Image (tube, rainbow, N blue to C red; front, side):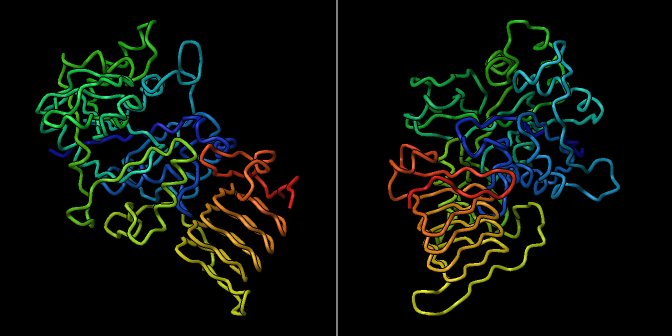
Length: 417
């Protein structure tokens, strides 16, 4: 039997821990890896897995996300079963409120599930960086004759306090949920690791509709899958954990482990970007059998100009996106977004530069994230004196400087150079 699958992406999170990159955009819309957005990962996973019916539920600061979806994720197919459709908050609850939780977000759009009439519904978050063959998870769900399947990733036992941990039997049956419990049970046969919920679920449609109606009628519920609905099912229903470490991606080496990163903080976001420019990164962006899809921009090629001594445009161990021009500046160990300009004698080290930034002559930047459209003046110095940087910018405890951008190009003001 051909399984009809409806994909739903929850993309409404504020991403407060990723501030100031989420000052003007939802977390799924935050740029990543030079030319992508975070949401491109989950959408690529769906499309590469052969799932073409996808609703994207948006909420907070959604304009940037909506624009990205409209530019890069609209199908030209005549088939009604092939679509990626953004769905703004509909205010369908009795109090006409914003989404109160993950389950409430689906409940307020329950008509979309009923109209699609799928066999299963895959509900995934839109704010993580990962590769996943979702077909394998659905096959596991069908093989187990499950009502609900929860994607789970092994994590070190001492990190249990950071996750929602699922307790399972040997066959993957979920017995209980433990929310940020340092003493949560470990995986069967592995005393050093726990099963951390990834927040990705596959539901049999009838089960999902029943659970949503029951939860909506519960005045004491927070209307969240992880906090309310799934814990009630554990040990009493056919609910299973899908082991993410068994997931394999076509085109990857047989010994390549699955990749998943929670880029919920500036430090985690920075490290995930920095990994991409390594010789053999954990995340392979060059796998043609499992492409990472995004908006197709009409950018010109990147260009490096001048070959004079002490004035040579060059980039070492760096990702350089389309439309960039390095005219005499030097960039090391960095990630450059689209349309970045680096002028003569400028020096960038260990930086993430988002789209359309302009780095003035002789400017020096180190361990700095520039948001989109920032113009750095000539002779500016950022990342070398953190106390001074804290006066004008956001600086993490680890010393990463984040320079906020705006919707239109702006100059950095107030810098002592």
